[in-house]
Image (cartoon, rainbow, N blue to C red):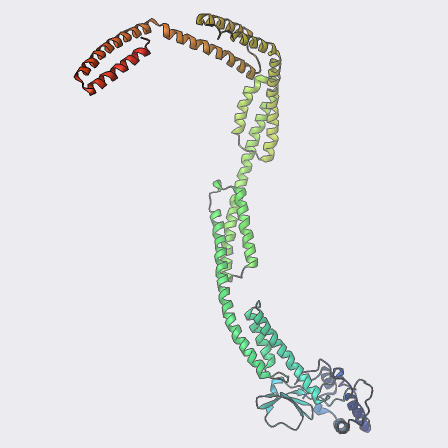
Length: 541
């Protein structure tokens, strides 16, 4: 049995004060008639069945076990309880005659001597209960404040509430049942809503079941256990599905990480001489970041598999880093030798400055050597190339100055050649080819006497215009030669005579064919005759 008072360590009244205690109890019960239910003085944290309130335990520790309490104290407590019960009955029999006092806090009842604490599951179930003061659907309260819960056809003691009314005692233990029902309903809601792990919910169901089994509560505990059984069955199936899905996710994660390992192993197995290190280093960094992201967001792999894959990934990455360090170490040596060679070329190019335009040919040779010297690193290359280019710019600047001076000096020559081109326009008007050639020859001699002009573009344009006049005269000369060549004329005359003879013969053949009236012979002879006449006409005969 459990006692609920908060101040159980209060000093017990002396025997002569028992009547005053009874009077206090009568006044307290009368006050309960008008105090609302929400002013219940029983603390919210009253102990469950089978437990002793902390204050009572303290009193028990101070005063010793209840069995060792003085007999006078026990008799005094019994007398006080009997007087209080008698007063309760009188007050309940005549409620109308008692005036309703103003609501005042009800004084805490005097505690009985605390009993030793007993474990909750040890409460005996009895089929023949003692005399009860109040009985509900699922619970009852005995006259001494012992509360029991119905479990099938039997009653199980869940605790004691001696210092309150039976209604308060049942309400207290019904609230305990309501709390358990709320926990079960919460698990059901989480299961229906999804999102929670079935394994975690099963663990929660197990914990709640331990609290429901033999709970110090009044209510339909069997229905709670049935709901927990249904939940456990449903969650068992869901757990199996989750386990299968987890296995699939782990298999997919293993496949993905294996793919990452194979990619970096392929990179580590390449020939270091054929690797583009900047691009490949970015690829390796991206693979490592993908590994980290998958490790942070993906499912947890079995320890042995995860360690094996990571070892392969780490080893391949270490091989790649080793090759990269070796490459850049060799590259530093290459850059150093190229830097020294280019520095020497820069010094030779700068020494050509005193030669001016004449040093351009040598500078071009140095430029070819620069291209074959290799790279010396971006910063070194940029600095050395700036000096090398400045030396070449000085040489080409000297040539540009000379060409500008030549262009200024060539202005009068250009005008003179333009005047000769105007004279050359009369060559085309001359009908006599020999005279046209003589005029052109004189113009060409004066053209050469003027000399070269600058810039080259202006000279090229003037030469092209004079060349057109010369080609026109040459074409006329070739035509005259063809027409006045004696050999050509002799051959032409011989051909003309042969055609005339052939035409005469064909005319006789046509006449003979007409006499025979053979249309085929006539057509053939006339066709041959027409062809010979056409040839003769082409030769001018």
